[in-house]
Length: 205
Ligand code: ADP
Ligand code: 5GP
Image (cartoon, rainbow, N blue to C red; front, side, top):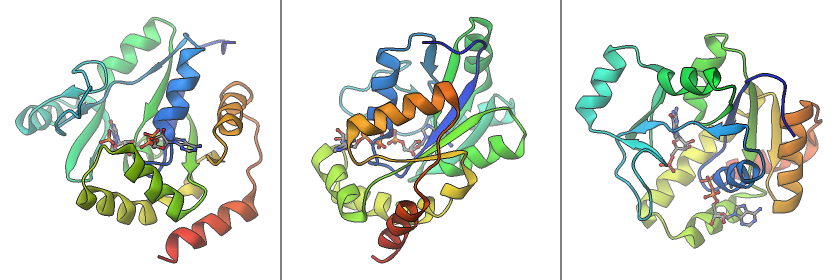
């Protein structure tokens, strides 16, 4: 399936909620969409490839890109800087590709406040405990990093109302189906009671 013209989709979620999993699955069967490759000062994790997962750059290089106005948004997340490159977006739009941005809430708010046309999705985990478990099972972060991500998660989930759509990623197959429906129909009513329950749970720790 394909939309008629290139569009921008912004996806945010607390780290570990499953946004990469959902995006990867979506992209594997929708080749008219591309994931934006952000620039970051974070060091690569095992298996991450420069230019594929991120452009891994130095702090000085990031600062010069900011000075050159090269980003449509940028933010500091978990001690490192991340930014979406204008050149990447322009290039893909010219090729007729729709773009998915996997960015944090601060970055999304910059896009929203700049009135850049976009559709936005916030992914929630089913609970605080499940989020922690997913981060632990992923084995990609130290305990200290996980604790920082969990603390950030509490702040981030409170911003879900800024987004056009909210998906609870409990059952993965259901979440994937909802993700696709939203992208192609932009029509989905989230379960507000469930979302409020999850929010209370996240804030109770
Ligand atoms: P994010 O990109 O939001 O940080 P990931 O996509 O890396 O999160 O997912 C975090 C971990 O949780 C991964 O190990 C992934 O396989 C797992 N995961 C993702 N979605 C689900 C789900 N619905 N149920 C159980 N585990 C999941
Ligand atoms: P990770 O280090 O796990 O790859 O990403 C950490 C967080 O940074 C995630 O919430 C991700 O969405 C966010 N992020 C990745 N790229 C960008 C970006 O270009 N801009 C912003 N604002 N956040 C980003």
